[in-house]
View 1 (tube, rainbow, N blue to C red):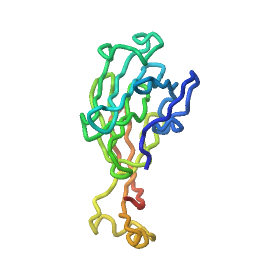
View 2: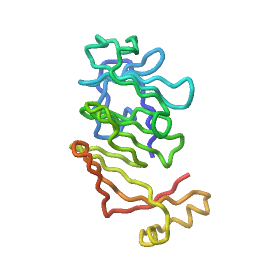
View 3: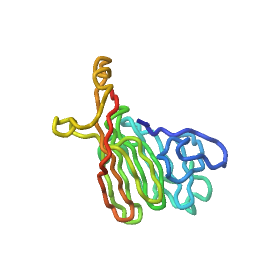
Length: 200
């Protein structure tokens, strides 16, 4: 499970989204390290993230490129088109990517049971809030795995040959179902694909 903390770069080269710690398939940013955070520069948005002084996680400030005039590190926060403080939804915020007018925020404090929030920046609303792991975005469709409630009737038909070994190692066993979420229609579709994995 990825925890999206991003990596820092001081040049103007475009960085692969996944290498930058963002969701695979989201837009590739230019990354600029600031004195008090990091700026992610995209074609339509510039996003400044700062560690929250109050709790673990990031505060996010979104700007249109013409507002920052090429210097997103020093721009007045009052000029931000969107401000999302950590803890506003389900937990501590970590920037996870941008795709067109959609913003992805990862939330949580541990490697498992993480939450993903997806915002439609045009409509200024939250369109998806879900537990997830292993996200990938392709052609506007987000694919991820969601943890199932481990009731016997749910998990008994999901093969998990290493379950006992993981339990002996003091790990938990997570059973997951694959889901698709189409951004432009906001349609969520569970798939008939399941898996198990070791968790903490």
